[in-house]
Image (cartoon, rainbow, N blue to C red):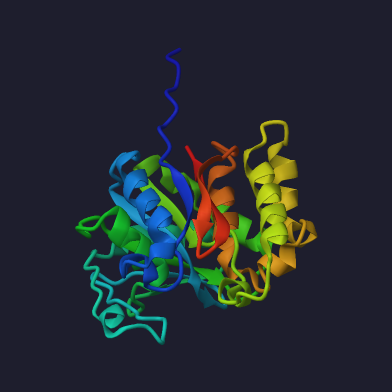
Length: 273
């Protein structure tokens, strides 16, 4: 009997998208992040399509962009005028959107397609740095408004099979996201930042933690050191849960590909291959 050849699985990447449009406006506090995003794209095989789970889109049920040419959503305010002229003309991919919809429904996860929804800055900011020509079709999958970590891991598990089709999966958020501490010179959160960051790296990368233990730690993430200071609201962390769910059947151990400061805070990016 001929042996079966295991499919090559596409990478899964949890990355930081920084503060609004600042990374592509030349903000010096994002220089290391910008350098990382430009470099990481060259280290990955060019995907046939990209799926982004952005911290900036929540719906009651899992929703997938399904338009042919989604527009840009300037979902930020208070920035210079050039922030509202940024373009990223990547096409959509209605066929892939329908496939993900089918996978979610087959796993008893209510889902819907949205032909009108555009790309928010959780997509166009990092991808403009990674793939500036915008030639690769993209779609977005929403978070769930319930912010339930177990349900977001389940989202990832339901769509894991698309890794066999050269689809790059990106969770776009931040491993640290406390706006008050980002913009306050009076609050020193370096101890808390380092404590939670260490726990997150340990959870995602240690080889002596089983996949089941890893999943339970992520579900119970609020028990991590300084969890609620680092994430007063968890929408910027949950894209990581979707990434883990997508990767856990094939490559549950991530590697750190970025661990440096953005706006004075230590922020980490993980890659599953």
